[in-house]
Each structure stands twice: as C-alpha cells, then as structure tokens.
Image 1 (cartoon, rainbow, N blue to C red):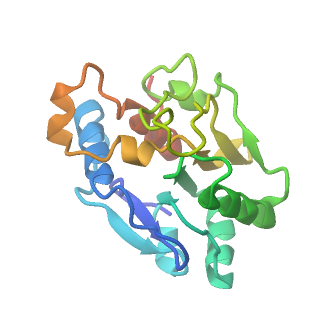
Image 2: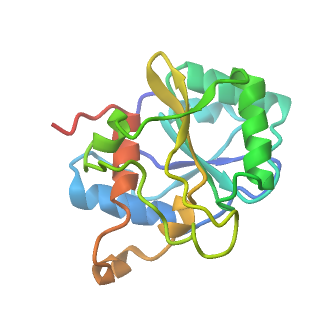
Length: 210
C-alpha cells in the first residue's frame, strides 16, 4: 500500500448506494493542495471493495444512506486491508445513529472486528491535532440539526483501532454532504469547513504536521 502520490480512493460496494456527495473529493483535494505540500492525484479513484486493487491505496472513503451488507469477498478484503495498515473513513449520509446505514455498517464492523471494536474516540485524540487544531473534537455540520436524521449533534466520532492507530474512522455527522460543493465557493465561507478533512487525511497518511 505505497503510492508516490496521495489518491482519494472511494470504495464501491455491492449493497446500498456508495456513490454519494460527488463533488466532495475534489473539494478535499483542493484543500490539500491549498494547505499542504503532499503530492496528489488530481481526481478521485473508484475502487471495488471486492477487488485486489484496494490494496494499492492507503486511504479509502466509504459512504451511503442505505444497507451495508458486504459480500464474502468484500468483507475479507475490508478486514485484511485494515489489519494491513489501511485507513477507511466512513461517513453516514443519514447522520442518524438509528438509521439503516448506521445499523447495518456497525453490524458489519462487529462481525469483522468484534462486538466492542468500534468505540468512541476522545476529543484529545491526535486526529484532532494532526494539522489544524480542533480542541472541542469533531466540528459540527450544518446537517445535524436540520430536522432530518436523528436531529442530534454527535459530539464524538467512533473508530476501530488497530495497533494503536485508527484503521476505520466512523462518522454520523454527514461530512460528505457538508463538503459536497464546488471548491471555488469556499471563498464565500467565513471559515473553510473542509479543514477537518485535511486532518483526517494527514492522520491517515501518517504525516506529521509539525
């Protein structure tokens, strides 16, 4: 899992709807270009979870609204990928801890890594200081209190940790939709809301901000 350039790899899985928030990857890649010096591929890569191509990429993104039910090969690849040092950022587009995506994805993680493997991470976790500083933990999204989903602000993220590093970062906050806009429109924001995306990727890549 070594590449000369960072590639934003999106996981395509057979169940549910994997192809969400289509402008988000370009927006995050623009932020990496703007704030960091890491070499980048300019476009996202769609990767079949059941394919061995998965193991070429140290970072992957998985999202959706619907059922997550991995095939046998997808489950094997996911588990092997994470245990081999890969990082998967998983974002629930429903931002709903009782929704279909959340329940089915969490069931998959319990099956693959054990019932207690997916745990809340503290707001002091190195993820929140990997580049920009987020002293209060994960930033809130505008979608969390819009009356859709569970109508709650989730003040935590969950993770499956392997060898003292996050292997699966799991969000019910709908960051994918929060960052799903043309990067040229960031200039209209009082604060660039993609900065946390930079933290996630630099943590995943093991890049030391200092």
